[in-house]
Image (tube, helix red, strand yellow):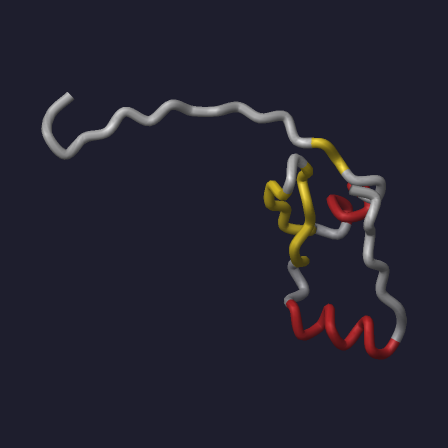
Length: 65
């Protein structure tokens, strides 16, 4: 290695999936790793449309993790 370079090791971690994982995938959720799980954080529609959907219809907070 030359000065200024660092050696980075790639870590492969198998993340657990939450109970509603297939639903989130089918609805184009963006996932991030969180506490050993693959967690959805938002959808293609955007956060404003998500907010309005919850206000006008219903939302679910999955705590199966």
